Image (cartoon, rainbow, N blue to C red; front, side, top):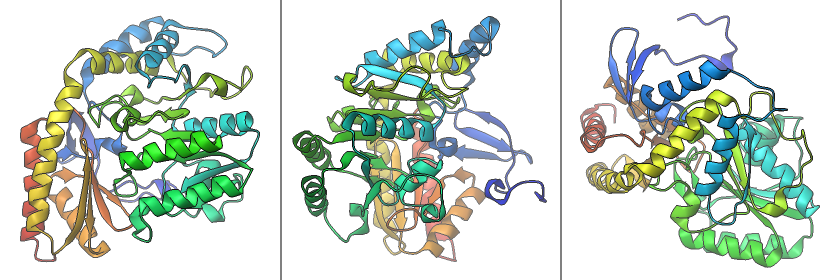
Length: 403
């Protein structure tokens, strides 16, 4: 298909989606696919018209947009509910944000102002956003080529590089904390999903929390990929039992509608009025849907069911790995998020294309330690569909003559 009118960074795959329901999508030829990518990894409830339609229509009848100068019920009620479900100690919230880049930049601003120090530590191959500042923080995506964004970031090689262990990386972090007096914060994704699903251990995160407390460094959790159900908890902070000073959310926050936010301890409420609010941040329709999303997660059995389904998912993936070790190096799984690391990029690419041909949509990652396929289905996925997806994986892997 000819896309001469598009910039090359947004040219779509040769697959036009015309209809979607739950985790099934249909292309323009009528072919059906299982969506195990949650559409850019953010549809925690899938393409479900239920809560979205009701909340959308009710809010739409009132008004579609409102200046941030004024309060509205959707915005205020969502803010209160978000604090109710937040990890203990996070008592303030700003949801006048639209995406993960906004949220992480908000965290940077607040940490630097509160600590009165410029530098922030992050990990290479993170995915912290697409603005110049968050690209610099991520240490990826040609970030060294951008003239925008500050240079006040210190990057650390993450454990999935196999160069150093988590213990050795903690030693490096402590050395930096101890030897410098210009460090404001460290930002970490508890699970580096875009890097191929690298999962930091609970002990690593707890020790990092201890170091931050000891040296008075702000701990920021980027939970844009992990919040709102995928681990069977509202937040990864609960799953790992570690509370950061600042926590950022987006993607699944409004079940696919544009909205992001930042939760923080009282002392980080340092920005004056009119700062850190974006034109479409806190959009009343997105807020109404996000409120229904939180209500569903807190009043139904869906989070408990995720925990049960994740055990089935891991068991099935372990069986898949045991039969395909010649092409698969490792499978990492946490909740309903899994990364399959291949021994070569060629194998990952062949399988990615073959899976789409067989009606299974996943994500391909080259950001981390090795070529990986990321599986992140909506949390509403059924056990039979989980098993079916892994069976498709197995069949495509074992029967493909190119592998």
